[in-house]
Length: 153
Figure 1 (cartoon, rainbow, N blue to C red):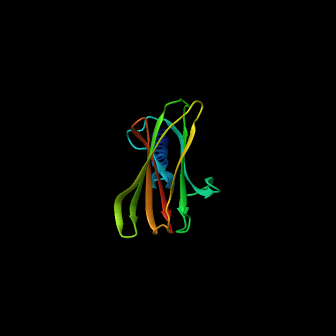
Figure 2: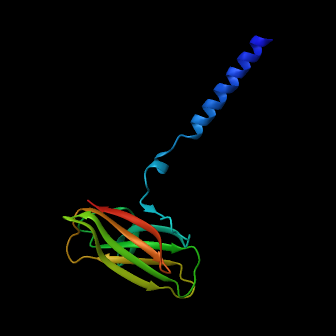
Figure 3: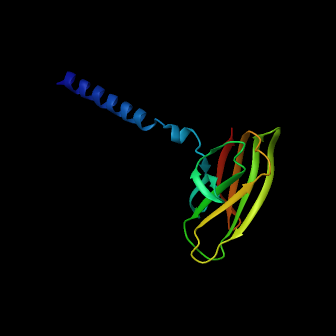
């Protein structure tokens, strides 16, 4: 009977160790930051944020990768709640491109109307975009909500 209890104890201990180690495995999603990330100060005002190619002056297909000749780039934000008078700011930055690092390109401000919950800021360059990494910080009512990252290849 004593031998049986010892095997039972070893089996339970092995089960606990395996269960703990399986619970600690991480996926690529948790170890690699996605193209959009919410800062610690996020209030949850945004339901979705993504970058998009231009399609006739409006946002087209969602992507995080653009070509130098994609002169107009869109950042599309979907608000969790549509309220008239919500202030939005899209702050466009060069992260590392064309010999520049951590440089602000432009701020675009917008105030929503009634029942408006999808807002897009867009930026158009008169020449090709320098290849590299960029980001857009999106503020809602003065608070940084999310950052969208994209690259020009």
